[in-house]
Length: 207
Image 1 (cartoon, rainbow, N blue to C red):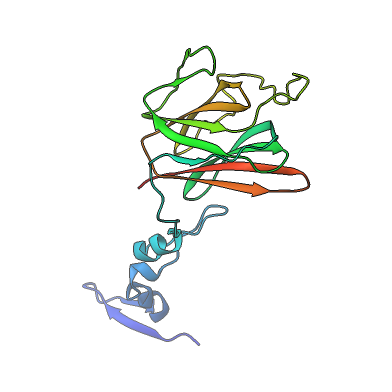
Image 2 (cartoon, rainbow, N blue to C red):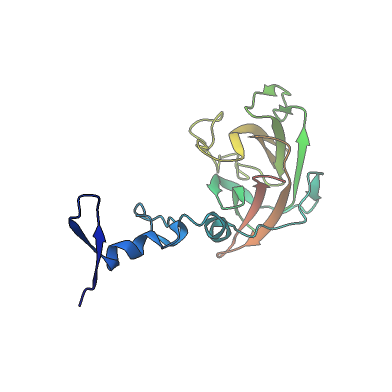
């Protein structure tokens, strides 16, 4: 049942206004829901929005060289990249047991054997050396990128700018990674499935 309040205007004509309507004016703006786009939650409460969107990122990473001198007979079969909430990731797929690596920021990346400059986009350059060849014992390639200058499409990535092939020589393969700036990174080695392994390099979006 609605209750009405009578208001007298200057012409002495009664105006009946529902209390239900008047009550809306008393509601704080932050409590009024805002229609959201598909897949998106929207609110006028900025603090709540920022808290909900905050992701706890890993800490303790650095930008100094990381190396593992282990050497195995693993062969490189693929290079792929992906985007995560806190970092961009590059993965080296290997056929065989886990092997070593050397990852470091450098002024420039050069091809193995020939020493030719590998042009890279970005404010900083990472040289990624995986201690596994991209050819088998018979000299047959185990990894054949379609475009050596653009191993993967990193358009839209927050940190990666370019992934380029720099050669495979004396049992190891070098990749040049152009990044937005000299940002912290970490290196992981993973085993499986089966007789396969991976070298993973994550580069943070920010300090």
